[in-house]
Length: 112
Length: 113
Image (cartoon, rainbow over all chains, first blue to last red; front, side, top):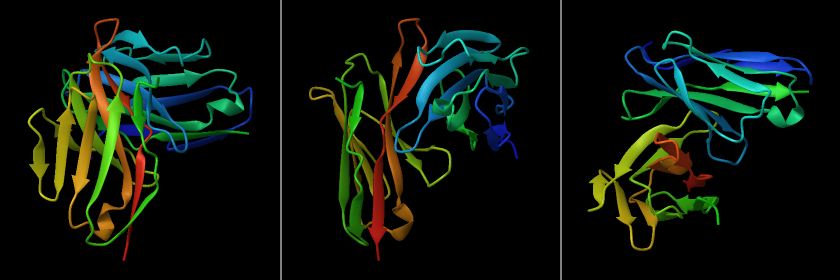
């Protein structure tokens, strides 16, 4: 499968715990995006990388959120001290230089 | 005013009917326009781009009205398999000079046999 892959697909955690999601983009894609989607809403932009550089972060991304793309390939999104309001689907997408965006299947987070 | 406004529906439409959705945007700097389809508990997938002159792909027609700042999607001869959520999306250059895709809330469509 050469699409965008995300891991884990589902994560249930207790409030206050840290969680980390991984995204492997399509191999030749230089741009990688993280979005968050809650029920009944469209995807909301969180952050964006071009190669290894994080070029923009949404105000939605509090200090508890951090994203990295250390070698310009895979990316991780970490949420520290999770809160119930963090429960959502976290979507990763990639593109080549602003072309079509391809999404992964998402990582669904439930914070109890 | 929200950056993107889209009627969430639901639209319940009999099979074979024609259905249309609109999506308005507030930022006149929006440069590119798209319709995405999202099936239940799946990721969004690009349905079609929207061009200034309007474009058609089989039973689907997309239109752009820059003066009134909206895009539309028309589905003719609707099929059961068209049941999904349809998301409009706009790409513009952000304040940081980066391209950013902004999505609407989605319109839920159910085709009834």
